[in-house]
Structures are given as structure tokens and as C-alpha cells.
Image (cartoon, rainbow, N blue to C red; front, side):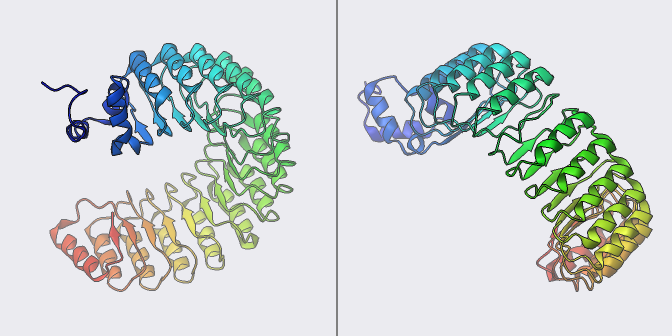
Length: 462
């Protein structure tokens, strides 16, 4: 009778072929010296660099098995343990392994209820670990106390570059601990969410991406960010989405943009900046020549705010992506945008979804597409343009030769509008993605569209 100790290697390999990654990684190690030797030569194990165990409910016990394996494994670089309820005890097991493991670079512990005690275990490990570069502790209720533990570790850790602390209830006090750590840590990149007052960007000169989505920092927080942007020379991407900075906060950011020369991507979506805030940002864009992507979605800027953006686009020559979703600019605002598109030569992606532009607004956009030669992606979905609007867009597609993506989803387009698009596709050869969202177009029209798609092999119908 054979055991693992006596079975031929080829047979053991065949047994391993039928094991999942978790069993292979955790349960087949340290059974015997011979099995360890065979495992180290087994191709699947030898090349295992990423292990995804999200939503497996492994708990603290499973985390212990994982930690035991990490102590001897020399191949794994990415470990995903999202939503496994490992708790503080499980975090301690993982932390113990991090003290000796020298290959893991990315660790994801999102939604594991580790709280401040678990954060302390992880922080203690970070003081000696020299390989981990990305750590995600989102939604773990670590609070301000847990943030302090992590911050204390960052003062000596010199390898971590990305830290996620989204939705951890760290609030202003916890944010202050992180900020204090940034004054001494010189390599940390921190996207995190929690009410805060950031004043360290002017000291921290390696940060390139800062994500403060959903923090309710308000106008005051925006001012702190703006003050830092005046001297910071490394930040290229800033996300202040869902922060209620208002027009006043937008003014602070705009003032900073007049002198900042490195920020290329700015997200101010859902920030209640309205028309006045849009004007402040537009004024800054007239002189700042570095931003390439701007998101002002869901800010109630209306047609007046659209006018401010139009004025800026007439002189700005660097912006390539503009997101104005959900602003209710209407047909009037669509006309203003369309007028600019007829002369603007840099914008390549425009999102005007959920703006109540209707068929009239679609006509304005269609008119612009007849002469614009740079726009490649246009989203006017959820605008109720109907069959009439679809006809306007179809007419433009017959002559436009640059647009590759068009989104008309949820636009109340029926069989007649779908037929117009099918007819246009017979001559248009550049569109690669078309989203009509039509479900009741009938067999005959569906056949017409299929025929058109066969002639135009470049189109991918969504």
C-alpha cells in the first residue's frame, strides 16, 4: 500500500492536478519532507504568484493555515482575502507571516472586521517587513486608533507605496495621525477615505495619486488640499468626488490650479459646485495647460455652467476628457457644447449622459459631429432623444470618420430609430462600439441591423 511518502512522483503530480489553489497552497505543505520537495518542483505551485480567496469564508482558522504557508512559500506575490471574516485574530496570523515572508508585495484584506486591534498586528509587521508595497484595509472599522497604529508603522517602513483605508471611520483624528506620518515617511502613496484636514502634500513629494472619494471634507478640506497643490510638484491625479466642497471649495482648487503645473486628472463629481463653481474651474483652465481629464459630473451646473466650460474649451488646448454627466444642461447646454466641438481640436472623450438634452440636443451634437475631427467617444445615454434624436445621430455618422464609440442607451429609441442607425452603418466604417439599448425593435429591424453589421465588420453592437 502506497502513501505520499512512497508514491511515484508522477502519481503525486496527477493528484495535485486535481486540487484547487487553496488546497495546493495551504493543505499540502509541511506534511512530509518528501512531499515538500515534490511540491516545490510541481509546475502549478512553482509558478503560483497570485491567490484569490475573496468571499471564501476562511475565518481566523483559514487565515492561520494561510499564514503557515506564507512562512515557507517563495513564489506568491499577491494575496486577496476580501470578505473572509478573519477578524483581529486572523490579522495577527497574517501579520506574523509578514515578518518572515520576503516575496508578498500585495495584500488585500478588505472587509474582514479586523478593527483597531487587527490594524495594530498589521502595523507591527510593517515595521520589519521590507517587501510589501500595496496594502488594502478598506472597510475594516479600524477607526482613529487603528489609523494611529498604521501611521506609527509608516514612520519607519520604507517600502509600502500604496495604502487603502477607505470607509474605516478614521475621521479627522485618524487622518491627522496619517498626515503626521507623511511628514517623516517619504515613499507612501495614500488613497484613503475619512474626514480630514490634509496639510502635508507640500512636505510629501512622492505622492502621485490621491483619492479622497466620499470624505465630506467640505470647502475647508478643499482649501487645505489647494494650499498644498500650490507647492506640490508630484501629484498628477486628485479625486475629490462626493466631498461637498461647494462653489467655495471649487474656488480654492481653481486658485491653486493657476500655479500648479503637474496635476493632469481632477475629479470633482458630486461636489455641489453648481454654476459658480464651474466658472471658477473654467477660469483656471484658461491659463493652466496641464489638466487632461476633468470630471464635473452631477454638480447641478446647468446650461450656465456649460457656458463657462465652453468658454474655457475655446482656449484650452490640453483637455482631452470631459465628464458632465447628470448636470441637467438641457438642449441649450448641448448646443453650447456642440458649438465648441466644431472648433475644438483636442477633446477626444465627452460624457453628456443624463442631461435631459432630448432630440433637440441630439441634433446639436449631430451637427457638431459633421465637422469635428478629434472626438472618438461620445456618451449621450439616458437623455430621451427618441427615434428623432437617433435619426439626427445616424445622419451625422454617414459623414463622421473619427467617432469610434457612441452610447445611446436608455434613450427611448424604438424600431424606427434603430432602423436609422442600421442604415447609417452601411456607409460608416469607423464606429467600433454602439450601444442602442433597444429591446423591442422587432425581427425585421433586427435583421436589418444584422445585415448592416455584416457589411461593417468594425462595429461591435452592445
